[in-house]
Image 1 (tube, one colour):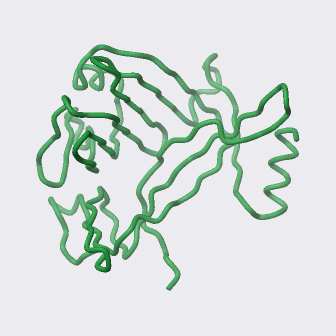
Image 2: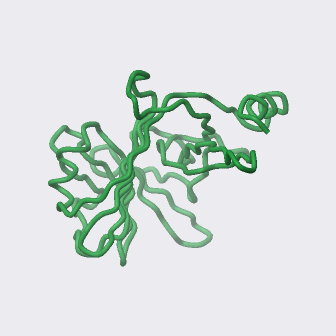
Length: 202
């Protein structure tokens, strides 16, 4: 099925909203430490998911244009134990995966300059996955974080958001790629876009 036919199919059936945009995907490796690398590569303000051997934390990076991480407890995890870090916003995601003493890096930038020779037009689909738990009344760290609690399982999650809602969702953007040999289409890769309020049906 061709790209145009696929887009038209989804549009007519109402299954998914498929949008075309110019996007740039780069992959590289660096042996620089996290601070040194991000100072040069991460120019915007990002939400962060930090996955380490012993913990998973949500936070911000460069929120105050200071090149620093912000977490609800005020503690930045040790880089020694990091496995994967995702920095993301509406226009970009920087994914770093630890590989020995180096990082494998993938950078995706959307809506980039059409004249950039490395960019290409691609079809994307955005989807929202509900984060477990309901917002508690208390705000954390100057209204920058919200604590979600799922009472039934007695678990909680602290997320970076300044929006007020009962439920929240992690928004993911998937990129449709095509196999030239088989003519088949599918999601070639994806990135995180935002954490937003979600209207959840009762």
